[in-house]
Image 1 (tube, rainbow, N blue to C red):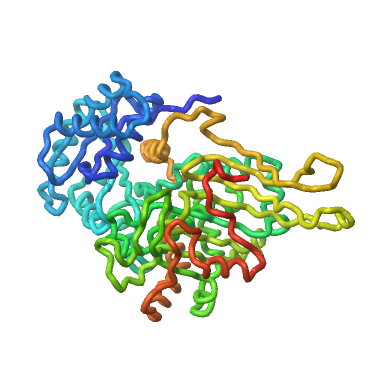
Image 2 (image 1 turned 45 degrees about the vertical axis):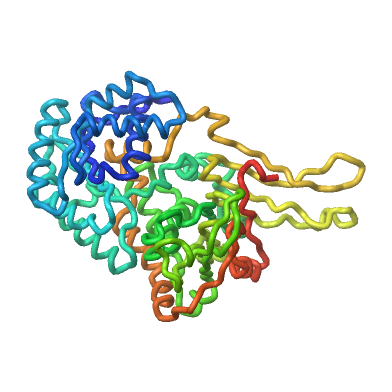
Length: 506
């Protein structure tokens, strides 16, 4: 096995260093990269936020959070190494003076740690600050690249709230930065199972020949959450499931599932193929949006003994809200590989289990052979790529039940990353941050793919803006979603795979 190379020298600058994302995901990911020996000796972190804090306080606070969140004992030498390279600067991103001080501070850190002027700016801030912050970085000269150093900017989701806002944000960002400097991050793409989709499809002669309309009946993509809005009512009520999950995570999972093999493992080659998939998805009309999109809100219910009140009664949610906490939709891809194969997507909050997976449902084998036997139906053959909370792959098929009669039972073969590879702790950001440092944009979205995704969903948003109902259909918290979503797939003679945890699968 080839040894993975260390990233090159750089400074990671985190705007929003006092926020939840930094302590819960970014710092643990950086610590795991250090444990994996993937960070260079010439490395440093500079946290920037509004609050006043010393370097020592910043290090102590993040170290305490890391110990509280970690499922393993921290290695003192690795943490001390990282802590010694962590710095803090108070500043208001609205003020140009902050960026002048930042420029001087980076020069000092650069000199002390020999990072060669390579800066990775991470915008862990609200989406409303993305454009002005990129503009401030540009005005200060901090995004200017030369032959002997690079400058990159990482932008979190949401990247726009509709097609117009996404185009506007892309326009601002690309007026300051070149496309190769922009890393639009989606943490789902850092999951091992998501990355494994390409390896699974294109690295195994067993699967690629049957990955098409001749053998696949339909595809289901599910991202189910057992939690409700959990105190995020103000944000969620202005966003909803379509914007929060479908426009980014779910369409990215779809492109990886449906894309053609790229010519090589180059960032642009793979992103070109993803872009082709998005361009081939049939756009909605008002009629097809009504027929093929279901939205709903969770009502009262219980999950694992915890009682949930209806969405409209959650704090910071409007009492007459028609924001969807659940959405299911049917998409068609108009190309040679997928013509006639429906893709069913669903996502929601307060569902019966936390479960993110892609199910490839293969076409049924003929029953002719088993006429005159007790066999009344054949087990559906499906392949499930489980993304979270468990990461693995399972294959379901039929096998004869031992005994004198011809009876067929369900059999499921499972592979779990944790069991097989004894994988170290990961939150998905390790891979993405490492790729940002090495300049590999394969797992990041380009401006055109962002806009293509919003173009698919914009007719739905337009229809909803015109046809605002008094209330949405509801589903009980702890259930598998609304009856309308079942009807969406059942009218095609199909049914959803049950939303249950990995351990409870047959």
